[in-house]
Length: 406
Image 1 (cartoon, one colour):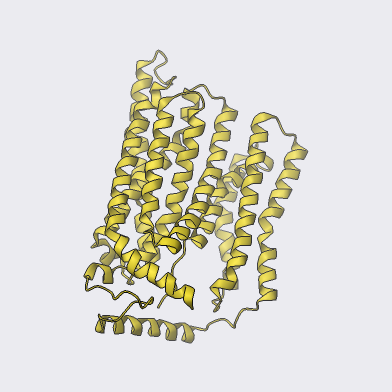
Image 2: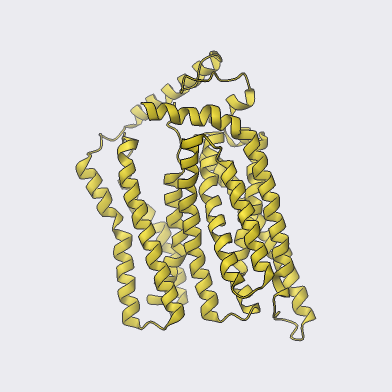
């Protein structure tokens, strides 16, 4: 039987992914400010070279998940410190002009903070030596054991789940969820399309917001410094959403067995409010609305992979996860090009200039439409919650209770 899944580790990894935008902006301003072509070359080469150079160090070990929690908390604390540090630097750059020497010192401190997780890993290895790495034969043996357990469970449908408190119902939908499905099997389930459509509404509208945030600021009279600050701060809100959603959903799942899709529904409803705030065009509304949309957008990137693994299993999670992730560019294209871009061009044609639109009316209708789309995503995610809450209560929550007692 697989270990109960947790959204904390994916949230931590996704959180650093959310911070990457703010970190790269600091790299550009410190090293490549007058050389964008070299910066683009670095972005093209570095993400490929680092995994290729470090992939030979990857090993599979047996570990004690409970003992690792304290180290994961240390990593999380470092991530929060880095996010807070970046937010302070971004705000200072908006308030005052930092000299070259100050920017270099701030960048060196940032690099040291990014390297600091190595100290946690080294300390963990020295205090709790890992078992020898699992060889291919051992991994294959473990896989055969898992497959044997699955066959046994199918042959004996009256057996109890791991908590030994509630027998699994003869409900084919509940038994099918949580099994290792391939992509075609997953696509035959309505749960797949509920999740896909909810992500198209949420991620699509969130990505459309960040893609147009500079243009929105320009139409509302924000300076270039203020709009660049908004883009940088978006990375911080994105990080907080990715990082926090894993902890919050795990807490309520462990405590009360709440199905994780309910938190996706909550973030989509909150995102709808954020879009409506931006549509108002009031002073400061873009800052307040971008915070709500950014946090909720990040939360969905943290929740979606874990929900995918819990409902469809982990054997083909990469394929299923990346297929569902296609919903993000699809939703973004429809909303950015066919809604925001079309309405902006139409409003600009009415103005005297004919090419640049000024005023809240430039994006009001677009964001009211995106608020409606996010609300539709909320209803779809709510439907997924009602479809899966029995599965989460009987299977996922049961595994967690059994794991806690061991």
